[in-house]
Amino acid sequence: MRVLGIETTCDETGIAVVEDGVRLLANVVLSQVPLHERFGGVVPEIASRAHVEAITRMIERALEAAGITPSAPGGPPPVDAVAVAHRPGLVGALLVGLTAAKSLAIAWEIPLIGVDHIHAHIYASFLRSRPPFELPPEKEVFPAVSLIVSGGHTSLYLSEDWTSHDLLGSTVDDAVGEAFDKAAAILGLGYPGGPAISKCAESGDARAVNFPRTLLEPDSLDFSFSGIKTSVLYHVKGQDRSRSAPNRAGIHIPDVAASFEAAVVDVLVEKLRRAVRRQGTRNAIIGGGVAANRRLRGRLDEFAAEERINLRYPDPSLCTDNGAMIAGLGWQHLARGSSSELSLDVSSLATP
Ligand code: KG4
Ligand code: ZN
Image 1 (cartoon, rainbow, N blue to C red):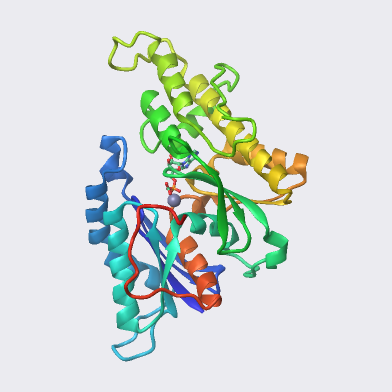
Image 2 (tube, rainbow, N blue to C red; image 1 turned 60 degrees about the vertical axis):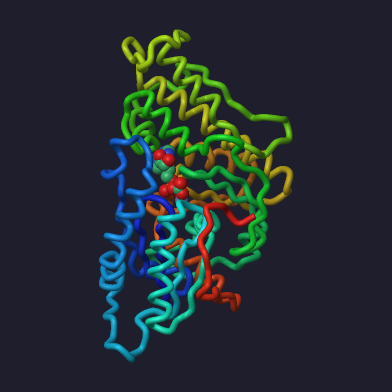
């Protein structure tokens, strides 16, 4: 069974075709970074407009890359279902993807499946572009603690199966990817900040600056990253608030980048450790754009070995937003006999 996945929650137009919930037949992503970088963040109106301009062409490209030729009107549908991320995200951007998905569902007379974007990040670990194209047995994977680290979200979930995720904790202020983006802006490293900080940190000393590791209450599974962002600002600017622009002279930027990255990674690993111990599970799943971070992956591997945890994370190319994770999770919903009405709406909020 082939599912077309549509992702337009933020600044990537991602379209994919996934077979049987696992096998990537096509996965095309158009990033809008060049449109937003001069603003230092995503501008919602520009994002929606860019999705409108790109989406039809991207759907055609994905079908072509999957080797699927759309049949003449009245012929068999080119895919068996269409899945779309309908929450959470920028409302205008979400509406573009949802409208495209509904149009295809009506034209091809196939099921429409609304998918939660964050739950789809959890699913990304199970997609494959090479054999074996098989999902592990559900009882090997769940229950699991899932950690989602992205530009818009930082959350821990208790995952009972592919589609059921209960929130354990989330950020009380900035998302971790947002903290990377803001710290990179302060350090003059460009946008998006995650990959830029990560690259710059390679030549820095992670022990150079002792940035705060904000862990909140001893039993808290929530996150807070606004303090470390302010610490980076003060470190670069000094305590003198009268200077309006960051003064980077005399600061060794790679050391600051490496120290920032180390502090953030320590917090993420510690929170995952707390959650795993509290839930008494041996499984953890990581997802979201920041899961591409090499230092984080290295520390998570150490943590998994220490705690004897079965840890899963996506291929780096599937950490950031893409349509494949939407198609994959859509297939799971369909396999459970669940699809959406054509009255499906968008929401800026995550599933409660
Ligand atoms: O999951 P994603 O594509 O979008 C959201 O759902 O929000 O995540 C984007 C975020 C950005 O903040 C970006 O800076 C961050 O992921 N990111 C990284 C890396 N690659 C992307 N952060 C740290 N290290 C990376 N290698
Ligand atoms: Zn995302």
